Length: 392
Ligand SMILES: Cc1cc2nc3c(=O)[nH]c(=O)nc-3n(C[C@H](O)[C@H](O)[C@H](O)COP(=O)(O)OP(=O)(O)OC[C@H]3O[C@@H](n4cnc5c(N)ncnc54)[C@H](O)[C@@H]3O)c2cc1C
Image (cartoon, rainbow, N blue to C red; front, side):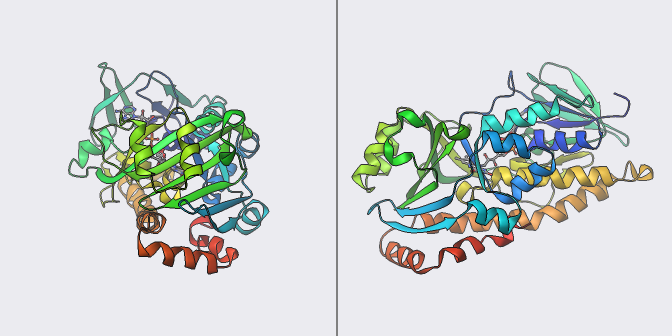
């Protein structure tokens, strides 16, 4: 590579989006992924218009429209009574209001779309089986060291290595993810085999006491993605967890019997302890900087974690590209600008997500208040409350 590349640690949604942002501007980068191949686990993602708009700007609109689904609405129901409470109209509504659709997609499909787009650029190198362990830096460059003893030198190093970020640990070891007390349960089934309760084309959110269930179609409608969030704690420092699915069935005991039965018919559930990492002030040190969950892991009640990683990538990519030739080493200002542009928004998304958790998981007397409020609100208002999020 002619110029010193940007080293990106982590080939998740955030790392790959940043690679494409840089590639489009002919900025050399190397992406290092610890896994043997770039493979997202089989779960789905809601991609709200703020994320889709940025992916469309990267030229991914057509590929997204083939692989993703565009749900007509979000149906909100009470998981105990199975009563319909309200709905948020998406489809054309969202497209017109936010100039981008609201989509749902399998993570694997989004990752494939990003990888396919990256193939067109010689300035990007994708390297699997490389686990980052440490870095050293001087006034001119940063060197990443991998667990296999190999070294790579670059202009900057971006830690897009998720909530357990090793890069963050290097310069902010006190910033550790915290248990939220929530467990996410994920499953993916063929639409043709799924219980009929789960086959609607909408995003369906069933709100129960201390737990909720969301399901929607992905893979051009051929599969159904299910996510249930209940109380629960991580057994160890990992994403997927061996907690048996019977714990899920126990946690959703108050659910309507038809809904619970349908959940029990789904053969495989994987438990994911939900962690949180509050945005903190030092996202960078010298030539190392953080992006996505490594900087701010958000509980998924607003479905915004990947969206924030995509927004981070878009912001950081354009700031790097805007650096004038004479400013090539003015990275301290660059990273400060990046953090200033992103910090408050990520913080707001995090606090709204926590509020949404309390709203979704209301129990006892609060259920009546929540359901009454939801039923009263015009559905157009339900969508408009997200203008601050989806228009940006
Ligand atoms: C149940 C659940 C549902 C969710 N639903 C949504 C949703 O609907 N919409 C949404 O926007 N967000 C959602 N999220 C959040 C979203 O999944 C994350 O915010 C997003 O994946 C973060 O992307 P990232 O690239 O920052 O990190 P990650 O996706 O975690 O990627 C990090 C990558 O870095 C690699 N890596 C880690 N350490 C190293 C190392 N030392 N060396 C090399 N590589 C390394 C990992 O293998 C991984 O590939 C959900 C999260 C959960 C748990």
